[in-house]
Length: 310
Length: 317
Image 1 (cartoon, rainbow over the protein chains, first blue to last red):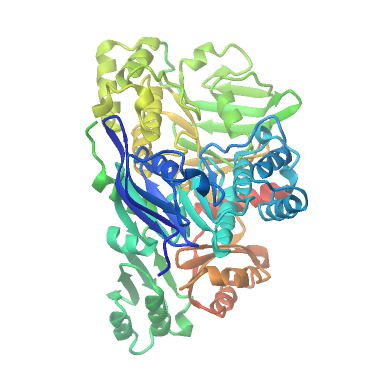
Image 2: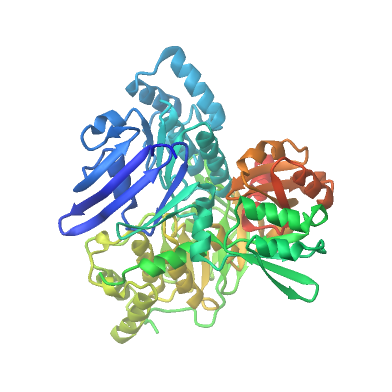
């Protein structure tokens, strides 16, 4: 296991008598897409602001890309790109002028600017938006432009706070393809969202409630712990010995006439192998996999942890 | 009942023909035709910039519009709409209640505006606060509520006068799943009594509507029940399960009939254009032949696929 690129221990933030973040410990692997989830008011934005050096914690330590963020908050800013819930593009000037302004802050100009912006503009499908002012762009395009600016200085980490809130389904689809491409290229992505199906596009999920960490797992581990698991309906005829092999791989089976229903808490690489091998090539398309929805998993998690008193 | 005049017994109704809204030279609505009859939950969906907010504001009587016909609850949107506004609950995208007042004070203010009798107000407010789980926060200043609580209050406040028509503009954007479920329960309690129009970018909310109105570039591109919209879409949906689905995405995209691929967890979600599809058996065999693929499913179309396909057809038009 590699050294975490984000490591926070005992992170705490109090505002007067109110504890917004309470002894939070986080570790994010380099190159991972890390989902940071929780109900409204659970402390997500406060945590992000501490991690990127905008807010000094009451207690705890933070290292981001090897830098002590509390001691030297300015040093972390060249390593990270940040996009908040409200995209910080200047109104009244065009997207291209925004680009030149941001590039100037990072000392990028001339040929380097043309090369980097040219690549980002194509990848983020922003060519038609270049001459537009941000206020006249639809929300999805504005968010993509915000993400493009956050990546212009080629940061090692991206912090995205609800980047897809209020964005339409086609723009979200494109946005996540871009995020997955960024991660495949080695960038670490730290992201919050209320579209819970997006949690499945991530490698690791931390869930906080009232400023405390209540879950930290992969999407499949969360399914195993907080749902009734997968249900697989098999329509194709089974090969001889298939049931025994499936049972050995952790599937439970129930028959209803000719129909077979398999259940398993989670689906991982070995169980997929076992499923394919047991069913054989003829059955590969003859099944229906019902996956527990992330909405239901997080509803369970929130209801388990929510305090109802003021 | 409230002392204000009501349309007792009248079916909530919207009848728009060639509704146009211009901002200067820009046309936000390019000629909307829409007929809605009866109390139901209607989702207004479509790409960003399609005109959803403008349409909802127009229906709530908040904009001057041009049209061949523009009737809402029997009022003409081109005339005096003051009486209409008393029948409409409207929740805008941005929180618009008084931040200085407490939760209960905001509700009381609305109660007084609509001249709701004290005993009636007390009963309705108690019920709304219970349903939204806001009762323990009744005395908290509204400005100190979390984003989800603010939106729950905004919807509860709009429901307080029991309007014949409720218009909600992205009222759940940025709201967590539990608060969204509480808002959905509030609306469900009024099902069959109120015509509710809501815009949303959540797929589960769109799927739960009785009827969807798909807007694109200021026009209604499609309308119908979620099932009717699905039936219009000429796409097949497959899932190719693999240990590392991101590794198969590029190869799946290269298949000639594939429209789009996105990975999620352990599978790649593959959309195939129906008119180019060589048939499910062949698609399943082709996907199964990609290195790493273990299992392939043909899926029923979901709301995401339906809306993505409508967005593509809108972009082509």
